[in-house]
Image (tube, rainbow, N blue to C red; front, side):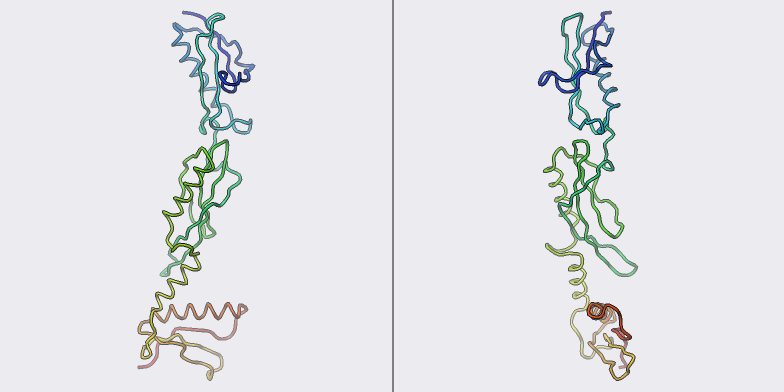
Length: 249
């Protein structure tokens, strides 16, 4: 069995010389061969890497190196590349996110369908990029925990995700989508229909049929639209409004 010494450095000693670690300078090692010694140094690098973190200035992709010597002769240079796992970096490590894409997502609210705008965001932690989704209706994160090596790769992944999950037409917001769906539900009025979008007032003389439809579903959709338009003009409310009414035959 032979004696070896090794020193660990920050950086790639082949390229920039690196900075030696005081606790791992001329560290003694015994092994039966150069190959066994190099394998042992590699294991040491992996263990040492697991004790590092991004707060100390390390990033994913940074290099560690070790010079292995038999007496005064260099018999090997071992390299190790830091990973997100080594540095304890995960999506929750990101502190700042930027929106790069969006899509419309639908969800059920009882018997009705609603929709919301979802932002697709990218963020960086420890030298790697992540993607997440965010909306104001409490939806979950539709993005996985995959790591990306560059902002460009993360942005491309975000745009692909947005296109995959998009439920609206190009350029539509959630509000646009819901308005279009409502118009499609209303369809054509029927002058002889038994169901009406009806203006109801505290003054009976003001009450009137706004429009008539063949089905209750059409009248309900028309009433929702009419009432929304009315409330947008009078946001503080009034003692009147649009309701669905079944008319006598």
